[in-house]
Length: 300
Image 1 (cartoon, one colour):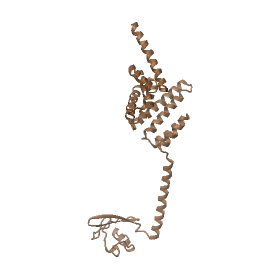
Image 2: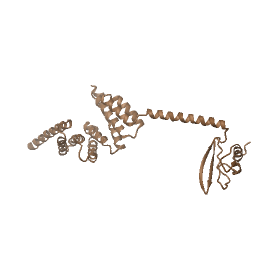
Image 3: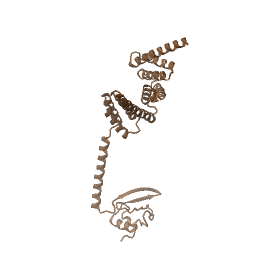
Image 4: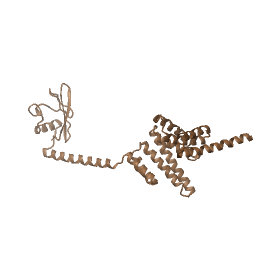
């Protein structure tokens, strides 16, 4: 019959000889209760009666150190067997964890694979891949941005199927999801230039009834400021894209002087480019508008 931790430790110590000054610690320590002991010149023992190990706390001059003495209460052969089992279980879980980590793709892998699918117009597959990526990396701004771009491209693809009513509804749903992802990308990384740019470009490019025009212009202006900080000496290709869409946004906001300056800036930076062609077309519309407005004023 077990009459408490002290008798348990006494029987244990009679079987096991611990390191010490030439003998068994049974002559050095007397345990009163779990977690308590009688202090001796060499230190103390804190005993936790658990089947596998005791905790020994030795001290000298108030300096404490801890040693975990494993499997003291178990027969030697049994202890060896348990150690082997523990090692096997440890390496099993270690290997399992390594397999799982190897199966999880990196952010860069997801972005590259989705970009390749989008280039092949396989937008549905790209969307599903990025939804999987968002579930694994919910706080990555670039994944949300690319998912938004994919939703927008899916919406554009849907708008060309020929069923006007269903196409309009599906397109609006896809664009709203795209803007939600752009907004999340900006929220997660306010300094993400691409997130601001694409939010702005789509914001001024969709029909005004989407209600994204003012936000679009604001994000384009933020993207311009970020780009000026990143490239103080200029980056023509990036700036021409921003000025192109800024001109479009300003025009729709009826800020015609600012629209004209933005489009003229595009022609200054890259006249022979797609953005340059769009800027020329915008200036022509603006010129026609100004002529028409002037004629109406003269008539009045």
